[in-house]
Image (cartoon, rainbow, N blue to C red; front, side, top):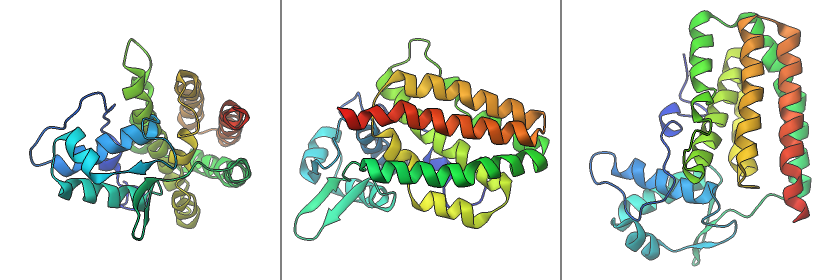
Length: 238
């Protein structure tokens, strides 16, 4: 069902909380290095704007420079890392309040309508795939929050992207993916409520999709986005 653009699902399902100093060697080494650095960025262990030194990562992860540079290149493509000529890599700066408001204005204009369209056309296999992507398996239960939070940031991106895909407007999907919205927003605040409350809202969306209720899907998406904005906006008051 899913296309290769704008998100590759295989890059979103695994998570690494960054709690171990090294990654496991093997065929998936490059992916594991990517996941380890991604988790550090999302959990703010590498703060926005901080310099990322390849040699430090070599020592910390106990791998060579090659998979690290490959991972940093992927993260640069996702807007999480910036490469500056003659300077090197750094974590992308935090988005401004103005940019935050613009992103939510854009999402509120587009995503409720796409949710309604998805509800009107969703098939049973698509509903099952969307349910699996909703992230409800990431609820508390004693899990390490620093591992769970980056995982949910990834799951949230998949979930919303799948709704856009089912909604059927490729341009809307590409436009929102190009903004790297979810990753920048989740870097604003590391907090369990960002995960738990969002999961409740995902379940409300799933109920609307299961009922094929267009108006309920639009309402649930609008409520989800507005509550997400309200949860995260205090990050700019710190």
